[in-house]
Image (cartoon, rainbow, N blue to C red; front, top):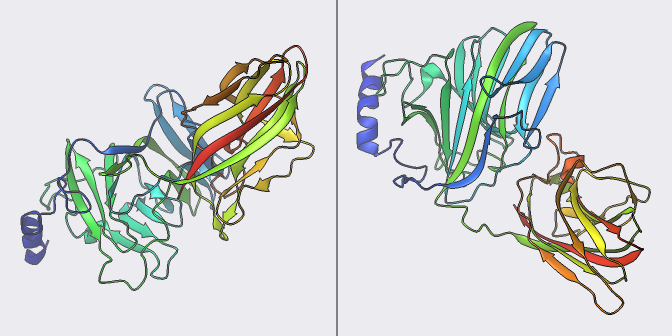
Length: 413
């Protein structure tokens, strides 16, 4: 290490006041960041939270029940193979708040012609730690005019984590690591990457963009968690993805959004489950991939018939027949709804249910708040998926019964 670099490492935290105790906007970190996303593989691979993306022979993503983690593996997998876990949710970034991501993983090994990566990314935009053939790098992926930026470990500008920097740490890629990313997106802000070692955050490299680039460094900071590997030659290897957390420091309190509603009316068949209303994201909004967050505020229902009704709020209900979806608001909303069609089979998940009574002289209405973690989203490719559709199903008890219902939600962009 040259003398200039050695001096820089010693004075950096003191002169610039830039340590792991300071957030992306230079504010002193406190112990109360606001939760935005988290995951841990305690019971399974979290199929409701993560989408497994695989290609190639000998590729597998398995749940390690002993160590409670996701293990991604190649067994003599050919060129072009990949194994990726990517969250369905694109976590909302709030401008002016430090967006902080923690990821735990173990690359285990770094064979040639195989890129392993973890990060906050959709593969086109985002921030990743990568390793390939023993060479580690941080990367800012971008679909904007400036394009991608990379920094190999020997060029990290705060601490190379090779035993010579201020941390004194030498990273061992065969061991578990805690990657830390924080960003002041604002689309021209700073991105810092580093590691949490023994409870202390050590920044390793920063990408600075303000007063430097002529265009935003990234298209969107609303991104998924992503971990995986891809090979360009026949490869046998494994990696472990353990845990993830995204927090907004000073943000996320009562996040606003754009309020929309959709209503449906129908007749609940006597003893027969009947489709009343469904809602799902449209694939594109303003000609761009739709990655809005859907936050259900309430479900409203009113029986106007003479028989009680059993209601089920479902995800993944198959709808056949007249299944055309209509835009909630073609100009301003990112969702579409359906009041036609018939249902087939059972729903994948019933997230809430209840009863509404009715007589010839009395009608009953409900307004139900439903809190859930299920992401109402498209898949990684931007296509409609079954579990990204929410439906209300009604069953008449003792006779057919007419009813009305409505969903109220917020769209957070």
